[in-house]
Image (cartoon, one colour):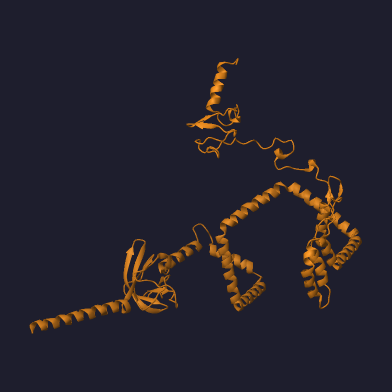
Amino acid sequence: MRSGRSTVILAVVLVALAATAAGLVVRDRYVGHRTVSALFTTAIGIYPGDEVRVAGVKVGTVAAVDPQGTRSELTLDVDRAVRLPEDVKAVIVAQNLVAARYVQLTPAYETSGPTLPDGAVIPLERTAVPVEWDDVKTQLMRLATELGPKAGTSDTSVARFINSTADALDGNGVKLRQALAQLSGVGRILASGNGSLVDVLRNLATFVAALRDSGTQIVQFENRFAALTSVLDGSRSDLDSALTTLSSAIDDVRRFIAGSRDQTAEQIQRLSNVTQTISDHRIDLENVLHVAPNAFSNGYNIYNPDTGSPIGAFIFNNFSNPAEFICGAIGGVENTTAPETAKLCAQYLGPALRLLNFNYLPIPINPYLAKSPSPSNLVYSDPALAPGGAGAPPGPPDDPPAVSAYTGAGDVTPPPDSGLPVYHRGVRICPPTRPPHCFPGHPSPPCRTCRRRGRSRRRDPHQ
């Protein structure tokens, strides 16, 4: 019983711990606060516990103020349910001189976009502090000192300004009233067209930004323009003479145009007639342009430079295929039996007509054929091929076959009077008739008998 009671107590304790941990996690993630740090140049009048607002609504408090030399770090506890944009800014707002200050986070989060994570730091570039009254008082004292009287002077700058203004406005009240009325009209125009004015200012800002981003190009343009102006300044006399000459030329052209206006109109009218004629004969001109290249090419091809006159040959094109010519002519007649007649012609007369085909005149000599080209007009790809040329260089001599059709590998005696050498134990023996193999200068090596005979002749040259 005691063991069962201990188990129940342990289970209850574990369930309580799990519920507590789950509650802490839920509170920390969904109900707790998010910690954000912000860096300010000063943190005058701001204390732990002051409010943190977004669009005027409290969303948290200042948890701590930590001075860090030339800056101060504020730790802000913001409700986790409030989303902040990633580029949020922090501003210390002073409602008046005596009221408590608060930290304003701006801008508010829109419907989409990245959010500021927990533990993020807002840098000095995105924070601002109010102007302190001491600074305002110091600047007012400085202004009063600058405008006040100084030692050794009878009047002050303010007095001189008032006197100068009175002298300038003396007797100019009507003009001043008119100027104010006109200025009021300008103000009404600007007020009625505030949208256009905003667009103008926005476009002007874009233009200024473009000029700022194009500083390098503007400097280069100014340098090149300065170089151009220096060149023009150095060539002032030449430029002046060129402009003077151009002026006189323009006068001459003007006089020429004025004197030839009628002639120019007449020539233009004639040109219009020519173009109209060309347009009317456009088809004929197209035919000429289509046929002229072939005509010129044919005229060039029939010219013989050897005789200086055109040449040609008579060819009967229709007799190159008489069967097609005759049977096709029969089939071309416009009647109902023409196709069948053409087929019968090709069937019965075709074999005989095919034997009559010829291209040139059926005589052994064609008197219309031109002579062969002159040798002076022939160009050989290789000069050695021309008549009287050296010809191709001789190649290396062919080696004798290692195996003969008569003797094989040298173990068979060749037939008599064959003129072939006889081999004995691998050594060639010359036949009695001394074939060409044994003569000097032959590419095949001499036999043993020829070598012996040569040695005997060298021993006894008188034999």
